[in-house]
Amino acid sequence: MALQDLTPQLRTRLSRMERAVGWFVLLAAALLLLGFAYYVRSTAQRKGWFVTKASYFTFTDRATGLKVGDPVFLMGLEVGQITDLKPMPPYEPYEIYVQFELKAPYFGYIWTEGSRAKVATADLLGKRVLEVTKGIQGAPTYIFHPLRDVALAEVGALPQFEAWRLAEDIYATNGLDLVVPVLSPLTNLSLIASVGRSRIRVLDSRPESLRKSFTGVWLDKEGRYDFYNRTNKPYWLRSDESPAVTERFERLVAQIEKALPNFLGLTNQIAAVLANGATLTSNLNVVALEAQPASANLAALSAQLRAPGALGEWLLGTNGLKRTDAVLESADAALTHADTNLTALAENLARTLDNLAGITSNLNAQVEANTNILSAISTAVVNADDLVQGLKRHWLLRSAFKAKTTNAPAPPPERLRSPRDTGQP
Image (cartoon, rainbow, N blue to C red):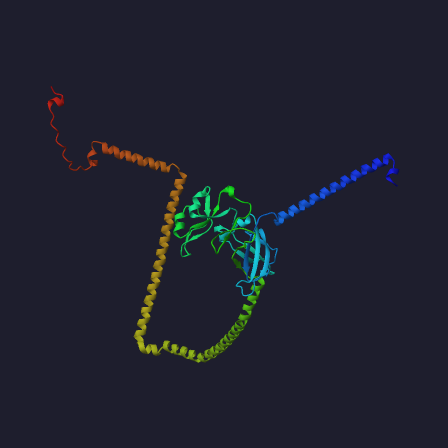
């Protein structure tokens, strides 16, 4: 049916429907665009697409457990990711080249001294992670202040030259002794000139000169900041690498394999020692059996020495044996008497201590029962002191308490004065 064949009412309804559909399509497209923009923004924030990133590289012995896209950690935080991982050409002293990026502001923690790239073990399955450490001194690896090469004579013409800093290390003529370190103020121009330098590289450290992009990167070999551009080589961080867990396990197994023959030899030696010990005990048993007759003969000989008419009686005689017995009996009696006296002395001492304990306990009981006894004793002492002081002042007993006097020095002669001074007429 043609549109001209419709009634005016149907054409009005159709135009309203077309406008509603059009608005719905526009609204859906707008929502779709907003959702896509939000997704792009969140992804950019998560991956750091619009964040300033600094490039670094390091070397490792092997690429085990590492791959492109793995995160890089600093103080436990994920601050970047690995961007390149490839082997070095043959005959190079290094094995694997690892390049990574650090997001702002975390690359500000990486300084020329103290910062390292550590390849550490992450789990027991051979996974490893790359971690960078915070710098302690030196200079920042990347800067945002503009650089300039100037002659020493032109330093004074710099705008606010006292705010400018040195952008390189100044060494002595031997190239070994550091004379002026980097980032020092431009106050040692005479010292710089004394080492034969006519031009220096400086950076503008004024706050208003700060840029949003990199202006320089540090070169360790040259000892100065280089002008930054897209062709600059990333900064080299020295690495501290730890082998993977699988490699450590292989080394442990190899050490165990080397130690097994020695261990087996040790067990054989222990078995030989045990066999020798068993033989020794059997030989000792035979010796003990053979020594039994000798011990029996020794017992018989000692019995012969003690028996009447034996060798002991022959040597000492009858009187000698009797005297020896008498001396031994006297010594036994003396010891018994001394033991009895010591026992009695100990008992008497115990009784004395018991009596002393009873006296002190009675005194303590009296003091506890009569709380005023101490004040009474104190009052008695004060009264006794007053009594003695009164006796000292009594005319009859005063001489008994008189202190001995010594010959006092003669008083100086009185000065003669005139009658006018004495007031006499």
